[in-house]
Image 1 (cartoon, rainbow, N blue to C red):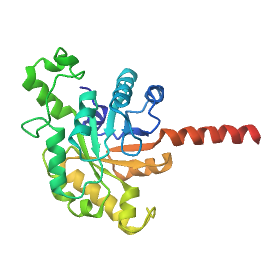
Image 2 (cartoon, rainbow, N blue to C red):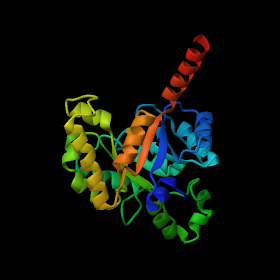
Image 3 (cartoon, one colour):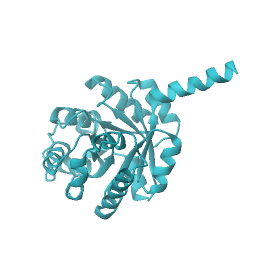
Image 4 (cartoon, rainbow, N blue to C red):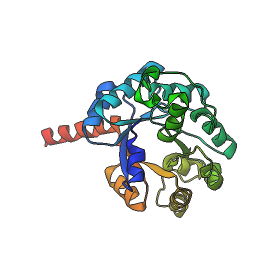
Length: 257
């Protein structure tokens, strides 16, 4: 189960991905051709059916790009379906406390770490792939190690309890959601405010101290470079649908100038 986010982290390299709202297999393949490490398939703000999600994950596999999925909520069904479809990572939004974090681990990780439901699926070629060289127990151990669980820090409550949340076994990383966190703090979009800067540093420090992967969304290439320089282990740079708009805006501008 090759996971470029994990490989980059272990090599001390910042992994770079992008967010996808287009729900298009062709878009996923094109993004894979761009040289990014992973694609962040967003099922929180862009609703995906189980079949659409599976098709996008298959397209990512074919393009050689690691697929991770943000589900809509702390839901056993959503987490299990995404993982069984082949997601190499799960991002769960809206975390507020350690009890919710424990529930996420329970749904996303196999025993003895969690209680993820088991079934032979397309991951491991329905039990006939190399992932099953060590049998069922070997597969579950490998899946726990290679399938990453990110909890999204985008509320004041999560930020306040982040030390304990990040300490949980089974939590592989923390994704900072700067937009929603700034809204929850009552300073929407004011990313230069000292409170946001302190929050960014707190996430980085806790992840570094706990040995967890720090991830952040960035809306522009310029800001993505700043987040990389700040020390984030993984940066989600941009959104495919916005890249489509801005790319064509530039063409229109060039043609009409």
